[in-house]
Each structure stands twice: as structure tokens, then as C-alpha cells.
Image (tube, rainbow, N blue to C red):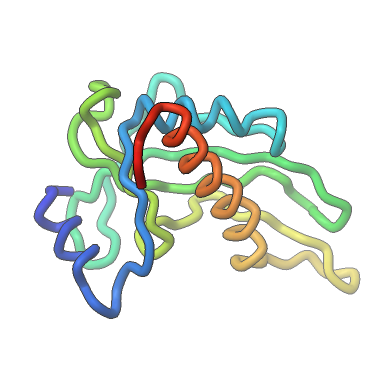
Length: 148
């Protein structure tokens, strides 16, 4: 994904409502901060770049962040969230990850037991990942002197 495509999506008035852009190395620090306190969090190591067609963008590069936290009504507890990346992810200080709800999607969804049936719940998946991830990104940024 080129920077121009990302900027086009971020500047779309009916598109992205909130986005955080950070380096892959900062994302690693965020994941490390979340791990344990908010369940298990991890990135593939080494990073695997998934090239897909998503949101009418061809050859979009994405990396996957994983989260696992058991709950009483869960049939599965592992989620895999795909995040768009700009640049070469192997260069963790220069490659950028975009955290924007409209640009992310779940490659691995959670399954939950509701009234004896096993169902997916995209809203619950999103809330389990987005809120702690967003807060941790802001906290790590503050600790490192970044202003948002």
C-alpha cells in the first residue's frame, strides 16, 4: 500500500474516523506492554507480510497481531487482527502501521456461546482488541515523549 493510497483513505470525509500511525518497532513495544495485563498479545516473529486486495486497494500489505483472552462464554479465545503496513516491515523503525478501525479486519474471529449456540460476534471481537490497543499506543507514546 502506498502512502498516497493511505492518505486518500484517511482524508475521505466519510471514511476513517480515527487513526494512529506508528512504526512497527513501536507496535512491538505496545504489544509487549499489553501482554499479560490484558491477556496474551503477540506478533508473528519474524513478521509475515500478507499481500491482499482489501477496500478496493490492490496489493495491500498487512501484518497480523494476535490476542488471546479466555472468557466464560467463548468457544475460541484467539483473535488475529490484520493491520495495514507501509514500507518494508523488516525495517521496523521505518515501516509504518496504521491503526484505524475502518482499515483493519479480523483474519481469525472469536466464537462465543450464546443460548447454547456457537456464534461469531464482530463487535465483541473489535472491543476486545481496539480499546486496550488504542490506550496502550497512547500510553507508550506519552512515555516516549510523543504528542498525539
